[in-house]
Image 1 (cartoon, protein in one colour):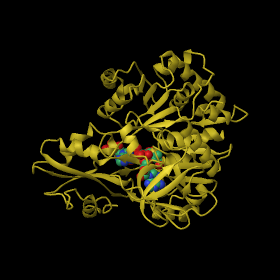
Image 2 (cartoon, helix red, strand yellow; image 1 turned 30 degrees about the vertical axis):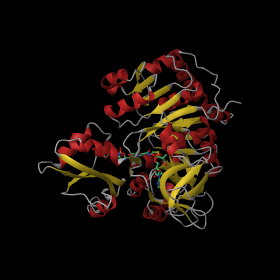
Image 3 (cartoon, protein in one colour; image 1 turned 90 degrees about the vertical axis):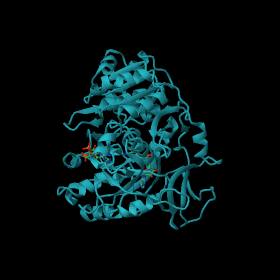
Image 4 (cartoon, helix red, strand yellow; image 1 turned 135 degrees about the horizontal axis):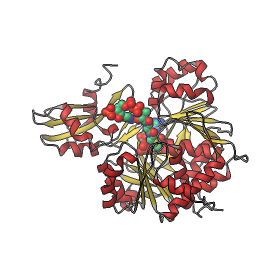
Length: 505
Ligand code: MCA
Ligand code: AMP
């Protein structure tokens, strides 16, 4: 049997294909039969555009049901799905297209003209638009064609998707995700989180990252269950749709915002069986407030683009605040020092992971890939962790210089390079500061001419960076704190400015 993830999902669809897969906010439902048909039409459209197995299909569109069916159509023909955050600006897109060389690039109608030269420069053969409702030239083509029913034969190791993640050097890396990565993770999550066909997942995450795309959608697909598909997170909307849901997945900011809502009560959540949190650390305070308010314990899990979901708190046993639980079935984790020496329980080091969830490597970066794997196949996550004497994994910090804001990753180097290029800036250091809503907020500390102003610096980078990467504050200093090696001490800067976003809350 093929190892194509779509085939593995489809094998688990409900016997009764009229059952709902996707429920829109206004109530319209799309059945599993309709999913199969629409994905098959997109598969046919991609074929018509010359897409063959292994070709990349880059997509920067609004969240819509059709965007999901297109993703599934890609899997079906063995094409490589390349989702891009809608916040990315033309400069960022130019890099991804140049690196991944997709055959097709699907954009929003409003960016079609501005991205055309970018796509042409990268040699993209087919540029199409998809609107917020999922309509446009590619959908028109899909609707004019008969759906493809066959599923491309794929091995576990064949590429299913490329997801870009920034790096400590400032250059983004395309994580190569395989069919085996997708199916193994979805099946493991279904099992450990006890998904059942009558579950209804409230889906309010974006669908261009692992959390909203793979964790939420693929787990639903292998269960044959339904999801309520909201275009974005909005606390009022979530509360409105909660009565019909049984489970929800979110970044910590979702739960912080829900707890601010007076309607988020024990009664409103009494029928829910599961709230999952991840993508960024969930504060123990949020976990506790949530339990006080609803009587339920959020289930926190831990993952990353390169390895999907890695660990999870248990469903039945104790869910412990400040921990991310145990490795998923078939996944091994260990804590090691910088030289790869394996450490014991309760010792802090870098977390390493091995298993069917771990990606194949970085696209066209064999050396970078080699440097992030140990000889025995463990991937070095860059997260500082400790495994306690009960086996719970604690993420205690990051060895990598990374800021996570509202669940989105921001690598300081990328912003520092831009800031350093501005007239009047001599040097910059970008840090994450505690923020009551986003968890961490991107902040720049700059040495430069006395004529520099905060608003002007922010305005100068805004057009070139996704909005979540834009510094929320810029501070000017005469010098940056350094260690004996001359390296900027970001811990000292974080300490100096730590009250910035907390004071006003
Ligand atoms: C929006 N803004 C942000 C963020 N989002 N700034 C910093 N961090 C953010 N995450 C900007 C907006 O552009 C706007 O700025 C201002 O902040 C306020 O916007 P607001 O309306 O509050 O934002 P929102 O539309 O409500 O979005 C916040 C959000 C969203 C709902 C938390 O960021 C979100 O959906 N995050 C989920 C991210 C996610 O799915 N991560 C999973 C990655 P301005 O007015 O200046 O434009 S996968 C992963 O990490 C691994 C694998 C894992 O373990 O899951
Ligand atoms: P990404 O590169 O977007 O896939 O983000 C992955 C990173 O998010 C991980 O390497 C961690 O640093 C962080 N992360 C994800 N889940 C958690 C969690 N539950 N607790 C702490 N950090 C997390």
